[in-house]
Amino acid sequence: MTTVWRSCRVLSGRRSTKTNFKLSLLVVLLLTSVVYILKVTSNQRDPVMVIADGDNDIDISWAEPEKCPACFGDTCELLRRGHFVKVDSESDRYMKKGIVSTGRIGGVKVIAKSMNEAGAWQRYERFICRSSPRPQVCNASYFILETMLVTDVALKVPWLREAWKICHLEKSALSLCVSDRFLEDVRQLYVQNVEDEGTDMTKEGDTGRAFLSTSLLLNEEAVLLRYFTTKSTTPWPFPKFYGACGRVIVVEHAGRTLDTFMDSSWEVRADIALQLLQLVDALREKDPDWVLFFLDVSFQNFAVDSRGWVRLIDLDEVMVIDRRTVVNQEQTEMCNEQCYMDFQKKLYSDEYHCEDIFKYTQMMYASICARLLSNLQKHPERRKWGELREYQEGKSVDLDEPPGKGLLHNPPDEMREALEGALTQCVQETLPRGRLGAVLRLQEILGTT
Image (cartoon, rainbow, N blue to C red):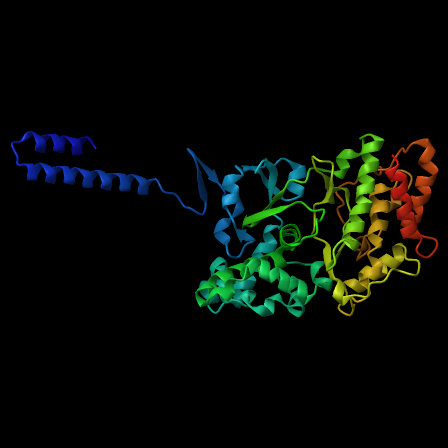
């Protein structure tokens, strides 16, 4: 710049005509513009890996945005707005739940979750390359748009029920009884009707389908949270879904998990227990279209937010049941642990039909009573109550070291006997419909605390 202005002085200092002076000024302005453009260009960085934030840059390489559209989504501006900070790798509690970063959006604390181990993603990318017309030069992140994953076939029930083998070693819960109606609802949410706006929008529609297929195959929690907290009009007890960047999703931080409340006052624990039973009520009865059935009950899969509300925070083992495809009837015969185990075995078999599944949804109450509410010091065998995979081929399941006691330990003396009796009937009913009666009795007892 010094050289530029020196030239200007030299030119203006001569006895030149007005025309020459104007010409020299124009030259100076052009040179100044060129210098500015070169400076800006030299300071540019990879827009995928780094997002500018004032005087600083935010490194989001941990979200792997360059993998899109073979990813959960591309709303990476969330990471800039939320001022995300990568979580310390030594934070065991966060790492177990797949939380890799925390931030704030609109004053709400949010988290970025990476919900799969590297092996699942590698299997997914290998499938994409095998399905590509040019497998020898395959880049999975790009070639996904040339595969069946962006076609209608990949969003139909028959294909989805077999497609879990692409990425996982065990069958996913969502695929067991999912309906085409639900998949179509979800497809519209991801594609956002761009296919109806003209042929030039086809590629954008395929990108949305790629996000959906990836989410369904890698971890359906991304799909369930997005659908039930953004499109559904029913207020579900889940953390809010904000978006996805690369291979992480951004959701509301739901608070502390239940195991951190074991030494809270009786009033606090009783309120949490009451909300857990009401949460099951909501999943079974609240929505006119869907019944949600979760199979994995543990202290780490529920949390209490800053308002004191209980949330289901892990939707890995959640089934979506279409009310139009099932017989809406209660269990008229007694069903306890072995009955529940037999049901799960049938559920995971290819021959099982889902029409009568609603009558088994009351077993969510039994799991809650046995594994979360019961005094586990008195009933230690209930820690693994109803856990099918504990009994398959001698396989041991890591239950994240559950507490040695349940939420309803050490109740007030005046309600101890009634509470224990209702909990026992909730877990092990001794007469038809005894469990539902016990749940009502528990809600009455806990509601008076």
